[in-house]
Image 1 (cartoon, helix red, strand yellow):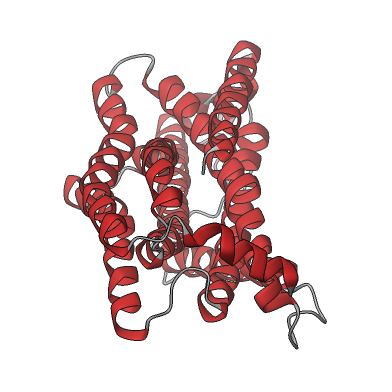
Image 2 (cartoon, rainbow, N blue to C red):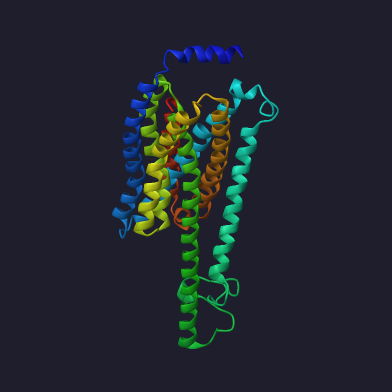
Length: 345
């Protein structure tokens, strides 16, 4: 417990509620503005390239940069902070927190929950768009050979021009269905990803709002500004590829931009009502558990739904070796940029 007392003594000189509140009000506008810039940038770039020959490649590179940001956020920012919160001497010296590595367990639960949502939603989408007789052609009922005009369908060979027309129509239906399912999957990924990031943003905001340590808040405002830019770029890259309507894109961008400022306001309210600051055991436990859950969600989404899908199941990347190299560099740049920010936040 001596370490806890010593840490408290060191922060007494920096505790100034009035100065801390002033810094927090300034941070509301700074963080909101940088969040808007970060999440809007990939969306605007996607709109700019839309309809141009390089559109698909630009979207893919943006998404790979975004995947690097998301993965780094989960492993370098969220998970270490959650572990540190539950390892604080005010928590780790008590039962049951000292008996079991809860941060790892809750991270695992977060990843499994993300997988469960992924499986359930994907099955629902495929059933909804493949059942009920709306899509009669079954892609397993025939084999696609060569180009679309050379497609051979058992039972239709030798039907002449009429048979060839039927082949082309059915092939186009299958291709459209596949593209539609891919788009729906991308929308699902973006939505689940935003949920994980919102958890993380709320934790950051509430922790900062409850803090009365001006020495901690002052550098944190600048660090969080850059943090929100890169995290926003990560989410914005996924939203840009999903093909949402303008209204949905605006709503998702707005929700990301206001979550951290709302968390700060909520933290200030919690402190004024309960007197708990960011170093109280209850606040540390909440931060540790929510952070671990968020980390698990983001790790799963980053590795499975972003990196694995693009690098192993993307036809465009598989057909062009240079694009795979550029995409990997974008992934590394995204990871590096977000990791460097861990020095300050």
